[in-house]
Length: 127
Image (cartoon, rainbow, N blue to C red; front, side, top):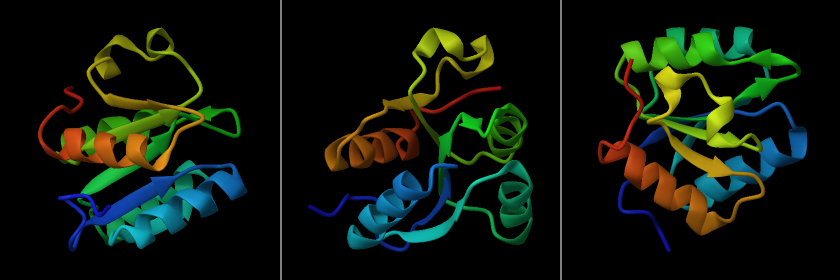
């Protein structure tokens, strides 16, 4: 099932676990998305968005102990929809990110596609 939003969309994938990043990227490509990344650290992610602004970003919160809140703030400031992919519950996020679309690990294909659709449709983080 191809997501209604997939055609021509660039998706930034920021995930520090190699196999999760690889599987998520493959899933997105199978659905017709163009993947930026996957990237496993903040430096790479900031470099990527300086070169090309994605249509939507899928972000793991904790990248080898570094929280990706500055990246989230930057993406929100640039009006990029965000999907938070995390093992943390919603209360672990700072209050400014409570409205972000979240997908809990472990997730399935339908979870990811629904979350992308929701984020792109406007159910998104606000600063």
